[in-house]
Length: 349
Image (tube, rainbow, N blue to C red):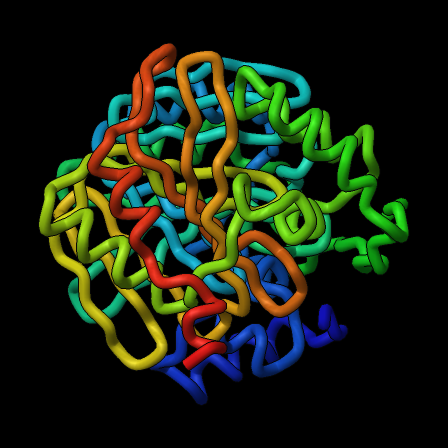
C-alpha cells in the first residue's frame, strides 16, 4: 500500500473507472485513500490546515450534515448537527443530540474539502485521514446544510500547501507487549469488582491482555461466544420491540455512536444494513469472525454488550442497550442478548 504513483495517473485511473468509489479505486491501484484525495488538490479539492479544535468548533455552523466513521468492515452514518464540542488534548468529544463521537486528536493529521460533480449534482465533503493515509472521519453536506458557512469554513482553514502530493508515514507492524498466559483468577476478580464499564480498559492494560483474549478466558458467566448470525437476530429483535440501543463503530482516531431505536434491517450481498432516516449502518458480515456477548458489572447492575471481531482480532462494532448513567440496563435488551444462539450450539449441531 502507499505506492508512489503520479497524481495525474491517479486521476486517469478514476477516468478509466468512472463508477468506482474512491476508496475502492485506491485499494485497487495500491495507494491510500488520502493519496487519492490529495491528487485532486486544485481540481475541486482543497487541503485544510489540521487545526482540530478550530475545525470542530466551526462545524456547528454548517447546520445539518451527515457524519461518517468507518473501519474496514463497518460504516456508521449519522445525520445531525455538530452542536456540543468538548475539546481535549488526548481525547475530545462531540456530545450532540444526534452526532455523538469520541475523537483522538493526535490521529487526525490530514484534512481536505472535496467537491465532485456528477452531471448537475454537486457533492461536498470534508475528509480527514491519519498519518498513514487511512480515513478517520468524513462529513457530507446535505440539502439542509448551510453552504455559505461551508464555503467560509473551507476558505478559513485552507492550507498554504495545495500541492497534489502528500507525505505519509509507512505503517509499522504493531508490537503488543502481552502476557503469554492469562492470569484467569486475577482477571475474574478484577472483572467482578468493576463499578463502571470504562474500568475494563485499565484491567486490560495492567494485566497486559488484549480485549479478545480477555473475553475468551474470563469465563462464561462474564463473556460467552455467540453465533455470527446473532448480529442480524439482535437487530431484528430490537427493531420488532423498538428497543433503544447503542451502536459504536471505531477506528484508531474516532468512535461514532448511535443511540436510539432501529427500524429497517436489510441484507444486500455480504452487507447487513440498518437503513433509517437519521442512521445507517453497513456491516460486512463475511468479515466477522467472532461475536461475543459480554457482561460487565457496574454500581447499578450489570451491562450486556454484543461485540464483533474480524480475523485479526480487531473490534468491528459494538452494541449496548441504551441506558442512562446510574440506571440499570433495559430488561428487554438483556433478554434479547441472553436468548441469542451460542456458538457452541452450532458446533454441537
